Length: 141
Image (cartoon, rainbow, N blue to C red; front, side, top):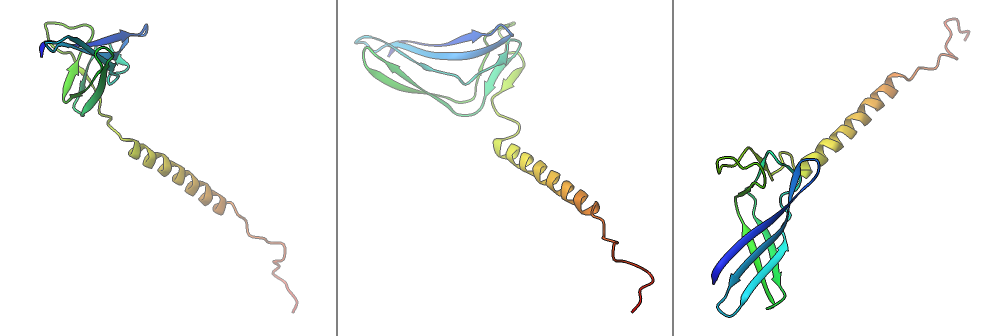
């Protein structure tokens, strides 16, 4: 493999965010020039003042039409910055790892619903009045 080139295309929005779009790998395999392309959408809605860092394993499948080839690109612990690069250093990074998982959000949501139901049921129990229609102090036997 000669002349290996890897490029990632970025797009920006009018509101000041950037996304990754495509990953292109081109090389010469001594028989022909091969260009493989594929969608690479790991970074989305990152502010232009930030870089994007990811420590998760990310894979992208790349395909080529002529000649027909397929490749899988794996990235581990990478960092990207599309705009506002100063002194060849990354700025503060936006992490790809969420600080709270989907399962934790489901637990919080169901816990809130259960607490609301509990509070409403206690309020209903406290608002019940005892019937005093048949109660008298002077009853004849």
